[in-house]
Length: 327
Image 1 (cartoon, rainbow, N blue to C red):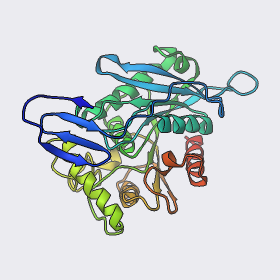
Image 2 (cartoon, rainbow, N blue to C red):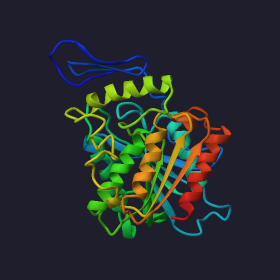
Image 3 (tube, rainbow, N blue to C red):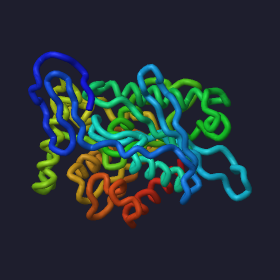
Image 4 (cartoon, rainbow, N blue to C red):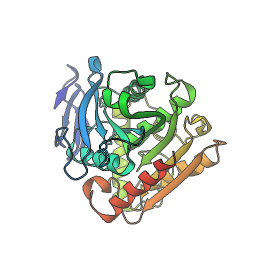
């Protein structure tokens, strides 16, 4: 629980049972505690991990994952980098949660990439768009390791900064999208460009939800109520490009600052239609890159975190690995 302000009484302005309660005074209660997993060398994959500061003064950090070296003891070349953002509705979760940690381990092992899993600041204590700034700072931190410079030896020694990818799941996919849009308008520095964008069950709202069942509609209604709490001053889910990048008047997706995009959705995810529409809008925007999409039949939002060893979760990791192998 945290307290981000004083005064104003204890009137509840948002109550999402089992998840989060926000008070007018600024007090926040979270009911999904982070199941902290320490950095380690994963016994199953040999992937090593450690925690590193990104913006120490703001409390932004990351867990970085280095794939196991081949049996020869050395890598055959430099490794791509995947900068990853966790989900949690912009207000929950952590890069250090056990499920997120396990997924990052599996991605590093399957893709052969150095994974930089970012622990950004959460809303409503730090309202959106603060976390977009944290994401950009993390990408700039990675880019600063070009030409063997920078503070992190795993990156200076092993990273191929000509193959930098950005991705995320749920709200983290939203964050990754906005980072890629910014990369189309601004330089990351040091000559580094984004290669690919990976959106896993992207958290986009607004628009038509007619194909969603009753339970899915109930969830979407909760998320619509949550958005103005985490993003004060929003114009609403239908026309705010932060939560609905397909909205009329949103920045043109043609300016997306990468060459390739993969969108993964679950067949039973209430937001699957938004992921599909993102692909359609991107293809029709005039953007010159390559778009791929993949759907896990019958699976819900974030299924890979709930059932990480299921056939569908393993298939999704395999799709991401294959996609990045061409990046």
